[in-house]
Picture 1 (cartoon, rainbow, N blue to C red):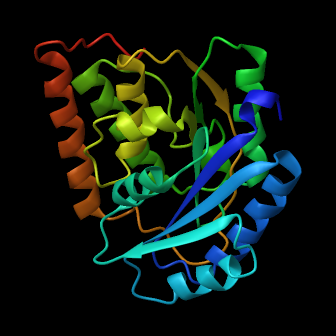
Picture 2 (tube, rainbow, N blue to C red; picture 1 turned 120 degrees about the vertical axis):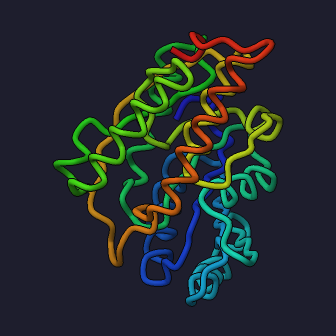
Length: 247
């Protein structure tokens, strides 16, 4: 990892992932121990009704200098968990991982490589070009493409963004983020770009979740996401906004 990347906070968001969170934490810590000397893993239990928090704390007690576990009730959503993690982060750069195991921590190296290859960049987004071959089902494919079309129609943004990014901590903490759902993973880079950060992008591979089923495929949540997309579009078209920004 290059010198400017040696201070990293990883936010791991978890909701009812008691089977997965421990193995995911250990895998992330193994990667971070090799990748950087200055890191922290912040696990946010998003109001789980199972033993996710207890499983996470069992790992945290073995790594007290590098791991903290945050929890709250009730469940808020991915956006709520990430905002909680951003507020607690202390390192120079921030990225995130889901606690379902779908994103191998080693893939984060591609974010670092993108910064290393162009020092003018200060925000890296990613997309998963083979996600529907590697992990996701047809329903998720339809919903993902539908959301991308709605995002483009509402905001004019046509970047491919799949929810893992690298951003300076201060920027993540100062952006006026509103979403409580997984839409935050689109809202954050859009607002970051509008604030002046210079974006780059990379691709990643993913894999099937370790155990259990996705909590994202919920039509109530999807309605909230579509509503948030339209709301952000209205904001971008309002005074001071611009549909073309973020491309």
